[in-house]
Length: 238
Image (cartoon, rainbow, N blue to C red; front, side, top):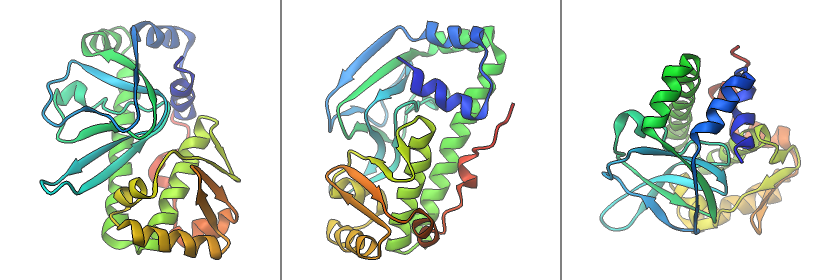
């Protein structure tokens, strides 16, 4: 049930059989959530965190006029809101972008897990810091990269993150986003995104069609993105 999550953890950390059993033991509930459902809203008081088992979801903030900015995408194996363990309520919303299956970690169970296995506290704190690093990279893209580089960088990031859990390779990956969703990730209009996707496709770099990212030239795509995966902290830590 939580294999993708364990794969993600083990990229950077050794997880003992005892620790794995403890993690599995605190996952007591799963839920199915339909696509395009805002299931946690800013300001909701939370006593649990949400682990994404299958599907694609996002964090977003919006304005009174309905304009929305997606601030991060979550893939299988990610905790969408582990930071709610300390914050207790979020300043942003969580929404599914495809049908999702999630696991619920009650904060009381998390607290006991960390008391019984202090090393896991550091492992999950690392994950929250990694989320912050991804947010900073997205801020750089929104503020300084042009539309072509910004789009290429997102495709490169998702390839790495999905490869960790066995859902991507150098040829591409499935991505359950519409062009409107992609525009809201990139801070662009849908029309602009369509032009950029055409440019990347005609340049022989990548094609996004029918929920599939097909990478035609990975090295060229990474050059176009000025992609440096250092912010994803892929090196083994222990």
